[in-house]
Length: 335
Ligand SMILES: Cc1ncc(COP(=O)(O)O)c(C=O)c1O
Image (cartoon, rainbow, N blue to C red; front, side):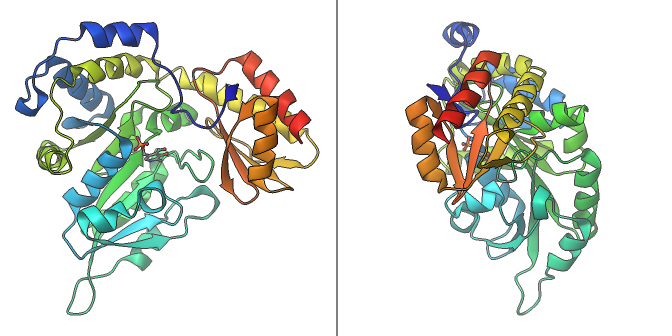
């Protein structure tokens, strides 16, 4: 089976398994796990932030950020299709007790500076006040669109001018960095916090990072504990994360394969395909997406339904050039 459902389905390499086995460990709730400390320092260096915090999942990283930056009863400006709003079980409402105000970021899922100014609400006797703006790069629901650092900077500046913090959901930040050919730190410099995942294209079995200024990460550590994310000998899972950081440049191969997949699928009658910027390929079908996916599965390819007539295929490090050719042929048979 060629599994193109997500870049989270990867299996850890032998090196990652060995690193997990051999990791020096301690109790991370006491901050005594040397491997976790090492990972946090490395990630802060890569992102150009003062500090970073190891969290079990991207969702927890985003939710901690929502809580850290806001006060109960405020509003958060989120893109309408963003993960933090759409795919995290209304976590902002439950964990931070805030009200999301959604903004249509158009085809690229980009919130503009003008939209921030328009969506901003000043606190008074009737209005809740805006506490946070969230951005997403790459944008999952928009097919892995990679915003440029300048776009992030302009929107963040508009928020900061209004005294509002900005959190970047960078679950696939390193895909954006490769696609835009610039260091990840350039996307992070304009925002207050960033979350990035080690367990997506980088291939770690588990784990994400929340990064930002020392004082914010310190508060994030308290909230992580509150959310039940304080871990003990977490070096066992942080060690594969350290190895995963070495896979950043390799993401370019996933992007190249996504492009080839999109080209191949675009040649099949009955499909129209968005041109991918990173490792996500959105395919529009004439028939119901679920039915098409059932037929694809029967031919040996897996994807996920994204809308009634849209399928997402995602390339990742367990997928080879041969798999892509086979997948194209299999989808053609299914169609
Ligand atoms: C953009 C984005 N943000 C956050 C997450 C959440 O990550 P996790 O599955 O590790 O909770 C995902 C997961 O797919 C994602 O695509």
